Length: 127
Image 1 (cartoon, rainbow, N blue to C red):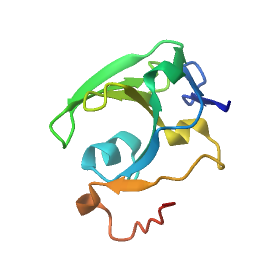
Image 2 (cartoon, rainbow, N blue to C red):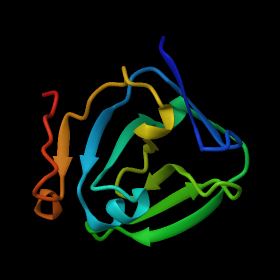
Image 3 (cartoon, one colour):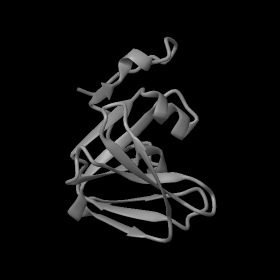
């Protein structure tokens, strides 16, 4: 079984994920743009039972564009958002793909909120 580790910039907050992600999605919503400081965010959704968190974190709870709430968890030392819990999918935990720092990580299979996509951000999905 594949084991992957994601961590914050300073390494204090770590998330161990077992197995393959349920899905990997690229999100163009404005909140993901603000959260990442980039044109989009990419999340790997894992079954809650396959995720183990170590280290301390602070929370930020916000409404999503879908109307559901999202509880983000970030490192209190470096500020990196490493994982979050979407209330719309309570059986999963989302982990920031960039926190794995693994170029061989599975590619996104879908994109959401494309109406907010930056016109210069061309995306090729692995479908």
